[in-house]
Image 1 (tube, helix red, strand yellow):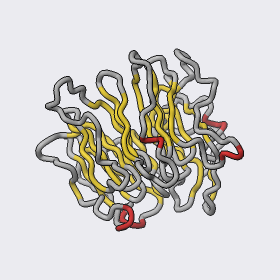
Image 2 (cartoon, rainbow, N blue to C red):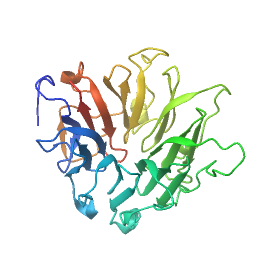
Image 3 (cartoon, helix red, strand yellow):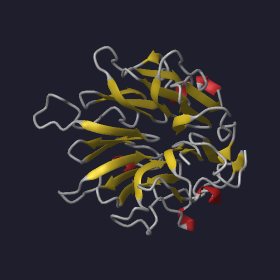
Image 4 (tube, rainbow, N blue to C red):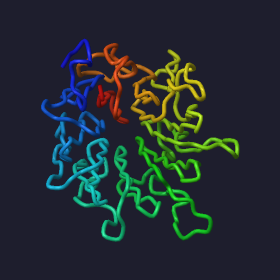
Length: 324
């Protein structure tokens, strides 16, 4: 797929760029999308009819998406997917590789029946689901302590519920209702462990959004300045960095209001609905680059208004939905 302008594309069109190993950057035609998520060499979307649409690799069950329900959210991991339906049930599929969790995709997951759910997040080989009582359910790999979710007891004195979650390659991150952030996992991970360790912030720091990449964590303050921690990039000798651009300033409408982090890059969506990208251009080998490298934004999208952003935390491709 190639284009010189987004203007000819109707609202709800999914546009991908970055590495195209298995068709993950080639969205199927004829759908108006409302939600997208990028996994490892595959992509998931929800169309206007509430159906889950898959494109890219089908290996290990990635393409065995559920049907027959109205779905409102979807999340793509390494080789499994999660979906949330309109009444708060969570569904999982794929994850057939025993070395990557093996049992991640066993139908309806978590403790559905006791709780309804409000959000989902698929990591590399583990899954998170946010319960309606503000606690988080985990299943799948726990080798790096992805299951040790802090402050996760709704009956504990002073409990502040989680209101948002995200899963990276080997760690999780959560946003509390009081504006604080919690992070866990990636313990003894061979390449980087600091993405699962919360830095010290001033006591009055209030966050409004979070994001987890393969090696990084991001948290957006209420003034829209961005904090990040984790690994610096794939090639420190070239000073590739996962730090957001210095042009992002507090209370600037061109700074991100949400962030989604990839393998060695990240995407942000500004308050104006523009998409921005940063990070290091890692050569993963093979595949075809569609439009531009994942740490850049194709020029024809510079003025596009974006509804949703997604980038694969274990891959190097991006997907967005344009509004106009």
